[in-house]
Length: 89
Image (cartoon, rainbow, N blue to C red; front, side, top):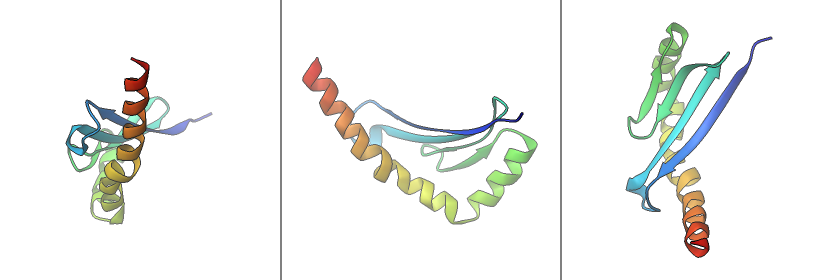
């Protein structure tokens, strides 16, 4: 069969918004086809299908919604993770 999955990731050096990068990668059969990165600020395609979809997504409301994810999804979770790590070190 075929396998499609999405990996969402928050990478950070501190709990400050500037030090956080939000990425959302879409895979099909272990091949990354498209990715949104908050440092780039848009979707980037890595295959022919991914490039076409990135163009469509970058011209629609999806790109605006993903840009907001850095603050709404990552910032609160990173704060929890940083506090948890600091209390255990």
